[in-house]
Amino acid sequence: MEKKEIESLVRKHIESKFSDRDRKEYIVAANWKMNMSAKEIRRFIGEIKEEKIPNYLKTVIFPPYPYLPIFQEMLRYDRIIYGAQDVAKEEQGAYTGEVSAAMLADCGCSYTLVGHSERRGYYAETPGIVAKKAAAALRYHIKPVICIGETLEDRQNNRYRDVLKIQLDAVRQEIGDVLSECVIAYEPVWAIGTGVIPELVQIEETHHFIHELLVSYTGISERASKILYGGSVNEKNVKDIAAVHFVDGFLIGGASLKAGSFINILRLLNVDGR
Ligand code: 13P
Image (cartoon, rainbow, N blue to C red; front, top):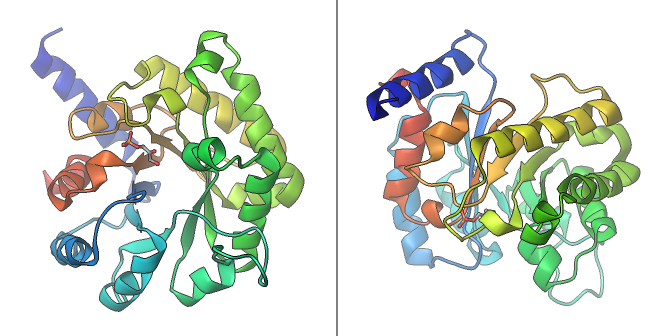
């Protein structure tokens, strides 16, 4: 097939996905990890505030903790929302270095990441800890984005479904049906920061598997379930991945650090703006 034909096919897919009047919300989230400075962030917010973003594209930014007040100041009445990259599982007290859900709520966060593979990997966060963090966030009406994903070894040994199930099971045990109110971010560890993404059929199969798990736990409808894809998403591949069934948005690392590339990604997903 010609490149042009593929392009128009992908575009048709995206348009049909967003075609009904009452479109399903799509989440485009930026995980800045341990990057950016106050100056860079002020410039970034200034630029993105100028962008006309349609209602069905929910834009969420996850900066490092110390910069949350800049968001609170600059985005107070804006549709762009923000959250933290992590949250303490405890309520309050002698936990040096931790930041509680109540503090995040104080800073105007409506979302928080939990269980990012870098937290699970470098800081030994077990599925049980991640589940407690999700519960702590929910107590303060902060929506957890529960990150799950398998390593390359798990994928190659065809164990990825077991791994994903273990990660989700722990959350379900902790919060039960409320799991249906959380966002899930599927981030294969081997796709994070590597420039490699799974085959589109692998993404579809895995998102479908996660969706079915959520259905079996909570009876959630396809319309209500929110499963984001993360791992080497950029301006070149975002449209193709957006067309994949059961992909309800993105969690973007590297390509979200420059306002220009993040805004371009939003434009590529904006079917009204073309
Ligand atoms: P990259 O987009 O840089 O691969 O990072 C993905 C990620 O970890 C988002 O949480």
